[in-house]
Image 1 (cartoon, rainbow, N blue to C red):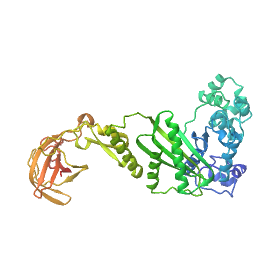
Image 2: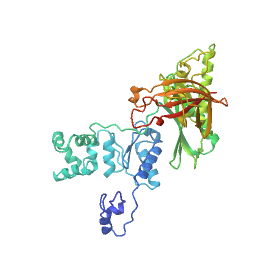
Image 3: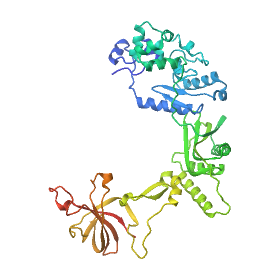
Length: 481
């Protein structure tokens, strides 16, 4: 049992991270202990990062307890760098967090300052001067490197910076030299944002939080018009839209909709989000109100102009795509599918179900095998996702049909049969492990028609001589109309 984290009072008592709990109790008998929950800590850090999205869309995690915010071009919206720093630190402090923050032109320099110089803002070019008096532990290097530097008499970052880079590299490695250079402002390692930057963003901030559905819908419609105007300047339309609602208590709710074709009309965006909001199992709870609503297009495409006055097919396709978008917004895009043929003779793999929004054009151009007129269908109207086993007491061997079978505790007597249709598995994909199937189209005495198959051959499969021929299994794979 080791100390995972502690507060300032425990530090003043002489405790440190990594100290055994028994030793800590001996040093501080009145110690209050809580079990560490790293999953909850990560969840809290993610929630804070979501809240920080209101300041900049470029937010990166710096585990275990840090965040990077790229505020380039955003500070003027909040009154400058000093005002933004106070807003972020003050809001988190009021919620009970111990906050240490700094602003610098490089992320490593800013992180170094947060460990011993919280609240400092460093101008571009002054990084080396700002971090020079800080202890070497502020760099966040490993304990072995920190101890080695101290034994060498290098106690501050400035002391280490006075040494030649090749000397530091030879003793402590190239990674530490790179870390030191970034802290001194000599180059920078780019941050990795949690979310990709959307192509277009529009947002509305409110001096007083809004709570009513009417005001929220009205502002969302206005943002849709602004977004369409911004995209129209470059001839683009939205394929994926995200609406983020920032509550005053820090909670963030994001709702996304996908479209089959690039959207270029604000009324279409407005309708899709209305459908999505109406279908939510968990209604959009404003709490004490939203102080920021953001609408972004995370995926866009160039709009291809088409003749729409005389071509009826274009209008039909537009209406069908719009219908699919509305249904997908209400019940989910994965539940609206189209089927595409696959180049395989395996029945369960011959058709692929894909999202209709993204494959509608491919489905319209797909070439399906034509049915032979005056001939019964070769494949059943209903094909089971997984073949269901049946009991066959006896059948004509080696490759004949059953005379009777039991499926779902009901016995069926075979009246008519067509087959067999032999289908071997794709040995180049399955290493020859799949047994050969013999399919039969069967009609029982009641007129019900089944598509059944024998898994394996009585003559040669299975290859193991110890396995009896009776181990060959039968399945029903589908039902004809």
